[in-house]
Image (cartoon, rainbow, N blue to C red; front, side, top):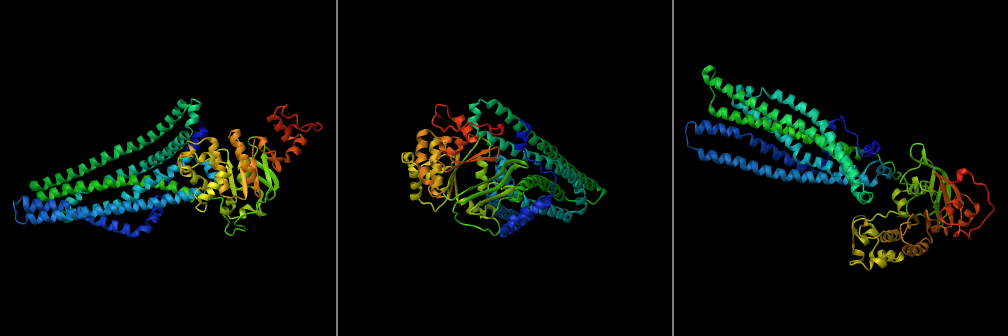
Length: 614
């Protein structure tokens, strides 16, 4: 894979960040559910306090009933033991329901916020970020936070309660043995700190590789037809193998730290228990005051229970680190400033008349790499204008700038004599309807694709729009007509049928300005004739811009604007431009043979500058 492609799919490692700041921000999402969280926290405290009494019950059972062989009161003792752990079960059950409910609600809020942010991002954002990486934010990163809220924060507090409760019981039973059993705790903290530092880097690397893998899969699955067409399966497989191998190695590196940490914790725990047993034997040899067998049993059990929550804390740290890395990436997206927005006090809202003016407009996708250079022109209300020129001359960019998909660096674009940057953005775009060469249809019904979620467009208007572009001729033949389901990206419909649906969609919204961007280039002649009849009628009383390579589709336009390398070189009617023998004439010559051009005017020849040649 080339460095450029790899860089596009790759995302930067998070590196060092402030965990507490991220955690505090995450906690804000819990404020709407503080009652549920409070109840879950209380149940967690009660459940873990009851759990900490288990070893003390063992001590009492051994010292008061088993060792002295006493049976009086044993049934009451057993009932008390059963009751304590029955309540613990009930508390844990309710707590689990509450936590998962809160977790799912928070995930819903987060996904909604991320999706809303993505909906308002300018088009330039999607030019620079692959779809797969963005999907990772909404899926695996959000899932990592779900685990944090459902089994992370509350369980950490519960583990801390267990640890302090066990330490309290140890000192209550025998403070000397308690000191012995806690000697290994500093070793655990050293071990945990080592794991924390290395695991953090591992989680960061796993996340970056996961996003890269998703980005690659999204792109190559979407382009599966092209891959198969050019027999590029082996090359694609090789690229996937490299990315997948990198992702696997990142996971293995993280597993390596677990493989050391968990056995080491168990070993340290075993050392602690051995020291307790040694101290017990030391006392029973008469060197010190002896302790009961029940005390030994309780201490061994408490030692096992003490190391379990400490180990769980390390595992929860895993969850926390994964959540922090994921949340940091999510917050980077949520904090990204939206560059194209509605001004605080827009000068113009509502429906436009349709007058368009470009005044000395300059635009570059990249700094100083100008795509549009000092372009000026005016389109009057109801005028039908064509934009022609070779590929990359800036035609489509002009229409994108008009709808503020990008903002210009120099000059002014006006709609109805008002700078488009002073328009309400939603109202500005509602005045346009665009029909593209590559039609995008959503999964759903034919009718839903025409109205595109606008509930104000009723069934009658949907059918009217379809009839206007003769889309009804194929829709009426479908089993469910307008309720017939469309597969992803319009699979199952021909290119021409998808174009007809796209035209019907444009007409249904009744725009003041109609933009046709190579809209008929992928349609057969018969279908194009049907569309052209509807388009000619629909363009009446509308400002229209037609972007086309095929000059046969623009000859009847009121005026033709000829672009070359981002500059507006010529403007005029079809015959006027042919008479100039300039760029348009040259383009026309390239598309038609001399026999077909026998009817063209033959003005006196003049020398063409090399700057005007394609």
